[in-house]
Amino acid sequence: VSAGRHPVSAGSLIALPPVFWLGIFFVVPFLFVLMISLATPQIGRPPYVLGFSLDSYVAIFGDAKYLDALLNSLRLAALTTLLTLILGFPMAYVMARAAPGPRAVMLLLVFIPFWTASLLRIYAWMALLQEGGIVNRVLIMLGVIDQPLTLLYTTGSILVGMVYAYLPFMVLPLFAVLSRLDWRLLDAASDLGARPPVAFFRITLPLAAPGILAGSLLVFVPALGEFVVPELLGGQSGLMIGKLIWYEFFNSNDWPRAAALSVSFVVVILSLPLLGRLKGRRPEAGA
Amino acid sequence: MNRRYAWPAIVITCVGFTFLYVPLFTLVAYSFNESQRVTMWTRFSTRWYTALADSQELIDATLMSVKIATLSATLAAIVGTAAAIALARYKRFRSRGLLTLAVTVPLATPEVLIGFSLLLLFVGLGIERGVLTVVIAHTTLGIAYVTVVVQARLASFDRSLEEAAADLGGRPLAVFRLVTLPLLMPGLVAGWLLTFVLSLDDLVLANFVNGPGTSTLPMIVFGRVRTGLSPEVNALAAIFITFVTVTLAVVLLLERSNTAHAAAQD
Image 1 (tube, each protein chain N blue to C red):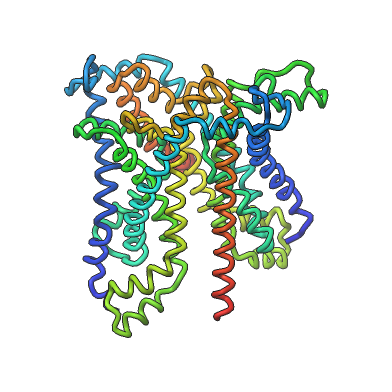
Image 2 (spheres, rainbow over the protein chains, first blue to last red; image 1 turned 90 degrees about the horizontal axis):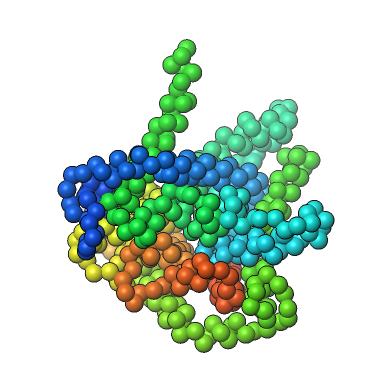
């Protein structure tokens, strides 16, 4: 095969444009963030003087607001991941086991919200959760409550918005894995006497693990830095890290502090798998 | 599998789809509401669609967004396809590990970080912000999506057709143009559309790297929505949802007729 004769050089050649592009526009920008996190803010253009100052980091670690926002983001992102998984796994499972016709319809039904602007989908919840909104009116009509509840601009409304925004990102990778699963394994397990719940936990779940991992990654990390949902549905209560970076930059015009916050955020993201590994190893280390 | 144990999954699936669709339906329903208040139904009216058509600001922003989305999707399709071919067809090359990381990490990076870091790059290098910088930002994100979709497509068909073409004397470029490209076209189209929609949808990146006079549609919508509810946005959403639904239905139908056609040929 002619293309296979020089696999090394041909591959490198084709990889050159994407490596070049992503290097310049994805990797190098983070070096700029690092550099400007060590700069000093000034009034002017650009609003910083380059140098080596740790003031921005000191300011971040000295103000509990930032740690609170980080912990709040971690909590909300974890809850979002868990809830999208609880809702999304059965959806992907039913889709994967459905006949081709219903499966195509359900796939379309997941794709439509996935492709609809998330800004518009989050906006929809503003109307639903308002004091005079549909959720309150339905609850009053059903007699569950007699005074409208404050639903909007709470932690709950942020969570609803996040689960709503990210659900398709969980369902699609799960479906991709489950639709390729060999269901005869389950038949075999059942023939050998495994009850369906046992077969589910011993066979389906482990085989679906790559999909669960991919979906969780696609939900958890972007959810950590989410800006639109806490901004539109969170009001004053939605203190999240993405929103703080945005505010430091656009409202306070403190670029070095926004940069230092971004660097700290990246460090947290990168250390997450490490923390998970340490936690997993602890029993072994103790034994 | 025992059907007795399938019902909880079916119940949750129904709840999930209801959860996904109630907001979309109310969005569309209230776009036809006469009242300025988005929560109270008064009577049927198309006044918000008229208002939408009369808003020069929204029309300009839509045209700007479509322009940026078209450019970004096309660039991302080209660069992303190169990445997908390199990853799917060449098992060993020096930058492979780097490339694998570079096309997956952006998918799971918070948009605020990508937008902010790109802005600092542009300011640091003295690049004037405008249409081009927004296109660069959207292309960077789009490349990752195109690579995933095209790579999946490349992995799904075997190489015997390409090998046969090469054995019959086809030069590598001719083999690519006549055999590989048509085969990966559905993936390419899907990746292009995905980047297009991503670009149309993006608020965060655009807000960081835009320049004067490059307000995109999400930026205008965000500005209106931030201060409260606006029925014009409902009308816009209804048009958007209709557009997405029709496009997806056509794509899915085409794909089905394609597979049916392929099956008939076997």
